[in-house]
Image 1: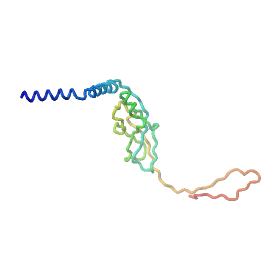
Image 2 (image 1 turned 45 degrees about the vertical axis):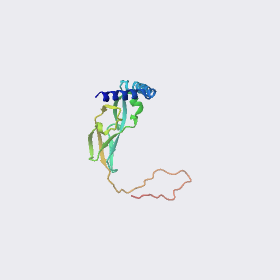
Image 3 (image 1 turned 45 degrees about the horizontal axis):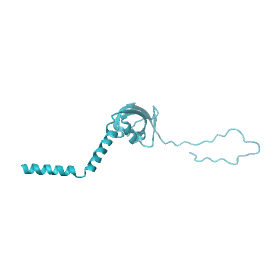
Image 4 (image 1 turned 90 degrees about the vertical axis):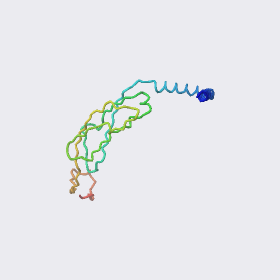
Length: 166
């Protein structure tokens, strides 16, 4: 057992004595990187106005929103996390495939929002949005022209043509 221990201690000494400059530089670099990125525990919160995008709705629906179509999202993270990510491009993705005519509400959840992994959702306001939906229906209507007034002296109308007529 003593031969094995002697062999181990000589291999440890050999490892420690080789490339010592590189090992010292690597340790210093690791310490500097930890100090710059890891030691700062300051957390900030920032609020963003995030638009709502409606998905899975056919073009024959008109959607009226009770609000301005934006949600207030508060995120928390380190100042570096906000510098690295761009939360201004976030959107709430709302599936309204089960839409019906009239006024209805949809609950907003955090999984409808793609948040950068280095930030945390603190608040989502409002948690519910109200919309009113109308289905567009095709109609055929006759187009009529009603002219009023008169032309200036010396001008005459030769013809008027309606297109389309319905």
